[in-house]
Image 1 (cartoon, rainbow, N blue to C red):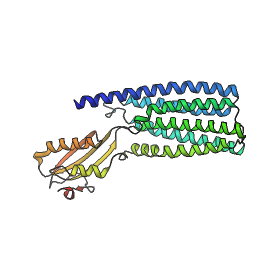
Image 2: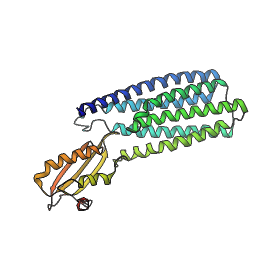
Image 3: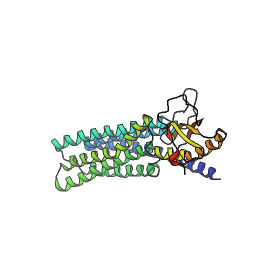
Image 4: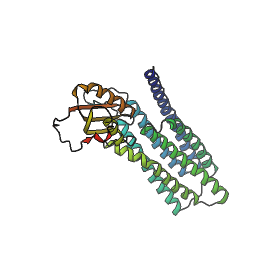
Length: 309
């Protein structure tokens, strides 16, 4: 019964995210067309360049949705894990795209700082205000799942970054229309760039770690070792490796030294249950009897005596 409930919840989450990606792509694509049109009509390079930036965000959403769907593709003889790793690559690409966008924002802001230009009218403020609403709605679609998947987090950060840019345009537009202090546009642009870098750095760091098969940041290595050692009959372990198969699935392999080979199957079952609770869904264990020599180097051996009561 609990398994059926969990499966149903997973299906609902998948359907919700799939719908979120589709709605986000459509909303932002329509807004880009409108923003390009408004830019040409008002002769605003600011709106045109922002529409180009938003186009990169739609591309990143499409990439994230493709990776999201590739996870469902079955494994085969060439790709024994399927295409789940693509989710990690896309999360890295999305972090890089965000940082590239920051570079363009900084270049444009510094250019405006050196050569201040007035905002071209109320049209820009209105269009930017609509952008805040569109990006806010899209970000809201991903907020509940942003901490469960790096790609969802990347999509969320893209939308928040765009919303911040649009808020900056609105604020600077209002200030300039009231005070003619045109330099505020450039200052807000630089501040926004800093905020985006700060919020994106964690995504980039986590993505690089997973690409290099590092231990996922949500996994505590010492806690995993402690959980394994706490199991009865386990006296030591070595060759423990933990890595991410995708942005939502983790794997572990380890050599487990036990004091009674007859207890291997019960120990194996208990360890799988314990590790599943610690977010390790794919477990491969090799068992060795205490006193036998491992055929591999085992300099990383963890003795379990200290954890036994």
